[in-house]
Image (cartoon, rainbow over all chains, first blue to last red; front, top):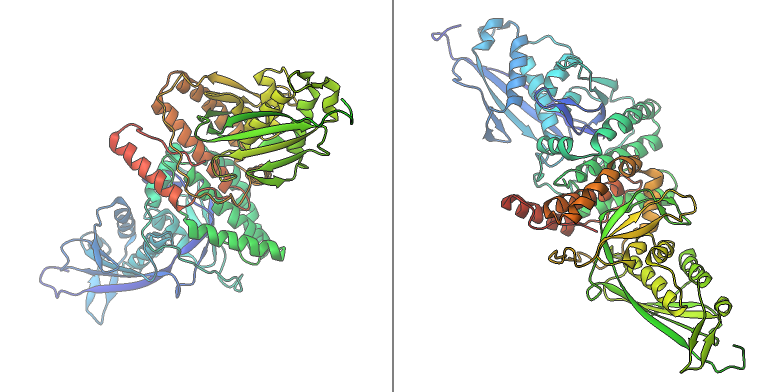
Length: 312
Length: 312
């Protein structure tokens, strides 16, 4: 490869669904490595419904790494994108495309720049885990482009460094993000609990009560909660561990009643620690309240949960 | 006194202000005696602004105890009114009104029935402690009618059995409700920390964001929280005790910054445990959120709290 070679472009495209936590991730114990204060569990949505689609391209003609989100260029300078790029580049392998006459050696990837274009088919930064889908997709697609050979656990750990909950979007079905114990984050990764066929009559309805961007980003919100909420550590250390065990059982047994109760309780507790933050963080509005009250009344009149509501 | 005597009516009127908690009472450890899970501190408002005015009348012509709230008759059968009536009747003493020719002996009060008329000069059951003002006023005015000689601490303990936070409306200024330790509630009463002259340049602004009756009463709401919130006991046992000490200092020193920060944090934590309840309790709406955000922005731009907002 050299300046005299033809100016080829190599591309790869991938699609990753968003995921909705049923036991919530809120609070980091390490900001740089994105290590959480508790385990979390999520359900990955159907990529036809809520997903990010990302195309990555590498070419010797690109003078720098650049990224476009929903058609608008955004800064790639943030540590999160850089972490993912660095970790994938480290694992890049030889790529050969005989038809196009492209031959990239492992070590060439350090010098090749990429262009990234990502689209969400749903509102961005409105509480629908757009960064989870986006960063999972970025890692997955970069991995494809650079021919990396890592297993999904390893990819989830890389995606985690882009956006914590992105690690869970690497898998379909129900996914657990194990917080891990190591300081270097090497054991903080996602595992699939069951795949998407396990509970395929479970229907998820997303009601977008506002498509405006959240006033407080998850990143700064959870930082404020860790610093100021007296309830967060109690939640993380005492409440969540037992809920994780119960939730795993509920999922394995397709026990909708337990699943629904735990999901609602944990979602509400996540909003509770947001409120317990100084200044308080509000992710619900009057419409969210009305939906929850409606669902509560319906379930109460039926005696058992027919549906559950999880403000996200 | 007997059936042949003239059908006299003896009356007394009193007025009690409402109080706004700055360290919140939420959760009972004994439902019947109304014993709380934590100490609380409040500021009593000016009775000219938010208060209950109650007139109690006794007459041998009344066949039963009756009560009117804001002009509408309400059932007196609830245990709370009965507790207050019983406790005051127990302590009633001889009353003589020579002009009217009325002579009531201590033991006559057991047979005499009362009529109670109470008015609030503000929205009832909308989160403005109408029952605190109302029950404090009832106890105070009944005590006046029946010539009881108890000190304010004792009266506060009786008012507590009508509505927990009513015990704090017996005093002006800043008031602490000591939760007490005894099973019979004998040490669960209010004490005045400082009187209303201590911090008389403190201005309290009440913004009524909705005058509709709350969807969940405090009584049933706090019962649900005690039964279902995993965070409440941690708040009561670990968070509140240190806040009480800091708040007492802030009040004594008229330290507005500490006072404001603690008040906001505790109000938000009260709303947090409401949210952590199953089903969740919402006492704030979008207007409350907007007021809090506005106040936060103002304080942030000034660098120190100019004003604090406490959704009640």
